[in-house]
Amino acid sequence: MIKGRSACPSAAHSAPSIALLASMPPFLLRRHVLPLVPLPLVLLLLLALVGCGGPRPSPREINVWTLDLAPRFNPYMRRVIQAWEQRHPGLRIRWTDVPWSSAERKLLAAVFAHTAPDLVNLNPPFAANLASKGGLLPLEAVLPPSTSAAYLPSVWGAGFQDGHQFALPWYLTSRVTMANRSLLRQAGYDAPPRRWEEVPAYAEAVRRRTGRYALFVTVVPDDSAELLESLVQMDVRLLDGRRRAAFNSPAGRRAFRFWSDLYRRGLLPREVVSQGYRRAIELYQAGDLAQVAVGPEFLRNLQTNAPGIAAVTAPWPPLTGRDGVANVAVMNLVIPRQSAHQQDAASFALFLTDAANQLRFSEEARVLPSSTQALRQLRSRLDGSAPADSGERLVREARRLSADTLQEAKVLVPPSPGVKRLQAILYTQLQKAMLGQLSSDAALAEAELEWNRYAAARWP
Image (cartoon, rainbow, N blue to C red; front, side):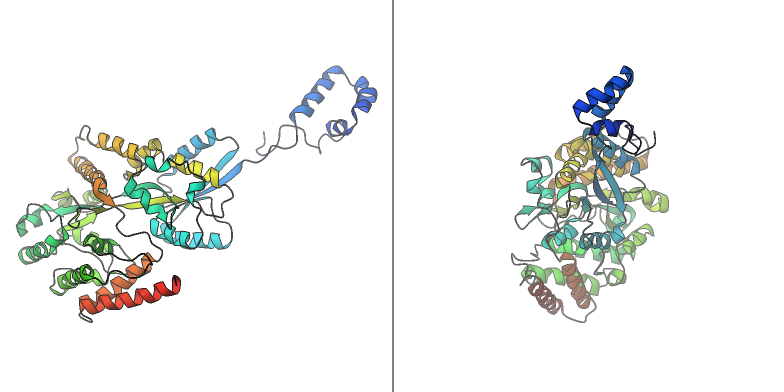
């Protein structure tokens, strides 16, 4: 059968027969036509009239966008899509994977053109920006009231803004500290520090006794948010309830002095003001950095790219503040307000993020699930029998440690609209303090003025 053609006769092909018969009044049909037609043909024509009400309707199509999953996860996504479509006859998922680098531009263009997808995979800052502009659907109308109970409370809140839930959490990543045990021993340490307040003495010992650096945390405005997260861990409140600056506080001044002093004392690589997170990876692989904050899968790349460094590397818990709270990165699913299939999009989002599908994706992608049930199952598997290969055992240990951090982890930087602008302002002013162009207190005060000008224009 040719795809898209109906097996039933169309009006064009049955003008002298079915279409004509169907248009005749019953009394004329009985009186003048049926007596002249053989009985078998009458039965066939009647069956055709009953079974063919015109061409079959096209399936309703739900347009779904994800970020950077293709081609590696094509088989996984196709299996999930096929399973959902089998449960929902007449519905079809049209899946599009978008490169991370162009996702924001493409989605904004689609929104302006009124061709937005029905379901989109986004991170919390971009989702918050869209929600603040009225571009996202509040999910209370399309999700069951008990939905939140299936997800980790710490990540469910990352999709909440202005009294509404705009996002469904999907998969998570949580960094751990990978440290060079050889450099630790030379510096007189058995393990890297657990708290930021311990870092200055540790960084000085590493620099003095090994000639290397302890850590690399970039201050490039559009790169990693690790330093911004560290401010929160140092008890800095970034914004107040009106989205005005709250960071020019005693805690904020201490944090700015902390980073500018480390740099001025030569305890951070000079490139932190000019190069991004990728430079930290390069320095660690070269043996010039004592530790780096990464995901567990970094070990696999390290074993390939720098086997000598991999042989002396071990995972430890991430650096935190005094409360021990680590950061977790969340990938969300949101429904644009323009979607014509909001309920169907919500149904697929719930299916994609249920415990069974999240557990499978966590195993394939080596990420962490946002589902509480899937996390328990994953933790149980990681506690199971250890692989025979020593490198794989180390990866499993790192994954177990990463999963454990979720017990005391949350999205540290509030997913507030304009948070990338906030990061750029704070990093730019901190660079000036590091380079001696301003005192750290003056740099923080300048950041406060600049952010409040921006916030007053956007949220009068």
